Length: 254
Length: 355
Ligand SMILES: Cc1ncc(C[n+]2csc(CCOP(=O)(O)OP(=O)(O)O)c2C)c(N)n1
Ligand code: SF4
Ligand SMILES: [Mg+2]
Image (cartoon, rainbow over all chains, first blue to last red; front, top):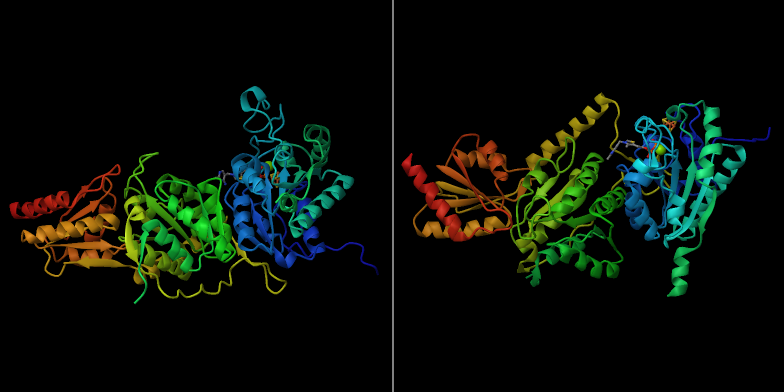
């Protein structure tokens, strides 16, 4: 009988701790499949965030390190400078990447660190129980914006891909979603490209994935998928923000 | 005989790190240790190593974490305010059982403080180099030659015990020039089977981690680490004794202050006071047993520091009432003079006679 689908070797057999309907699991699969398909699982070192994916080291079937909250891009920089021949990626939530770790993110990007960043934007602090994230939408109710995010008071959401568009070291930034099959297929292509870029030495590659948190959004899994479509995507437009070859461009300039 | 070079403490320490095969340096500028970064920036590219100026001390220490997890000898260097920012990373490095070298060329604090020499980060280095139950090895050089020797030693012991090591110097040692020599050859770092290299499909994934959500598991891991610390205490203590054989009075000082104390000891001896100097070289592990024994033999001790009195706590704990332990300190970037300390020795000797 022909095999139509097989679990990727890029994931271990450990059962994940993610809530039912959480799309962290889908994103894990897309990352793992990409690494397997590119044949680089044995070369890969992943950096876990502090956030719901904190235990991703139990799920990815490759060498892994746990970074302090927000510091994954700095840890990844140390790894990549130490082992440029390895494939280095970070997997980070919005609080991790766009609040406490903003400096580390932007500066790894400005340096054009040849790493791959998987950025999971679920508009909330999932792990700590649903507080406002830098990416929480205007008006969105969270535990710490109980009357809805008031932008006059709490500021505006951070648009990571839009910020990175202005950063010269960025080779690739794309925003994708995983709330429907067509979106998942596009997300997979983007993630794979972000790793392929690293293999080609192009520079800092980031894929922002709009993801669900049904638990802290107070929604059913299906409602959460709809919320991504109807609320998040309009605020965070999908698409390619940057696509270029940073390091080889530098060589041409030289 | 080994060749002698006239070098600044900071530069000699940087050169020692390179001779010790360190090829990964991550830093952020701060006075009074900027020469370290400048030296590394010049030399690393020639040696095929990494010198990287990070966006902050927070980033720099986490780059060290990454490079160390990858199995490399890695280091960072800073001064007091920068070390405060590194403490998060130091805690994670300690909790992940990673070796690393952190250099603190101390300046006066707290806050932005000043830029002149100080020893006011003793508590931070030895008691709370980060949150949680953890220690780092702390080496306190007292000469430019020791900046060299202890840098090399710190890399080696950090790797032997899989824990971070700190070189706790001060602005005076960093800026001072003295003749130094380097060992002809430093042994290569040991194999690190735990390092992240990629599995190459040939082994199970290596995981470098500090998260244990089950209290009993975390307790077990911390306890095992502390069993290792006990071995470190038994094997890694270093100290120097100066004119202690017949001493009835003892100065206890480390780092640059100990040099000044030696001069003060010599001056007081000319006046016939039987005084000597005990110099801890490792501040953690602290030479407790050595000081306890000494406490039973002498009349009194005087801890001298460039701080309001931090190491003196450990001296008193070690001596445990066997003799009185007094304190004299200057702070804010002021270096005590030999005459000033000699005056304190005379005072200590007279105090005893009064009693
Ligand atoms: C230094 C530090 N500050 C705060 C925390 C608490 N904390 C843990 S996870 C988290 C937020 C995670 O949110 P996000 O990065 O969006 O990831 P998610 O859980 O949503 O996937 C916070 C604030 C911490 N562990 N460390
Ligand atoms: S809290 Fe939210 S982000 Fe975290 S696992 Fe549950 S659904 Fe996913
Ligand atoms: Mg989040």
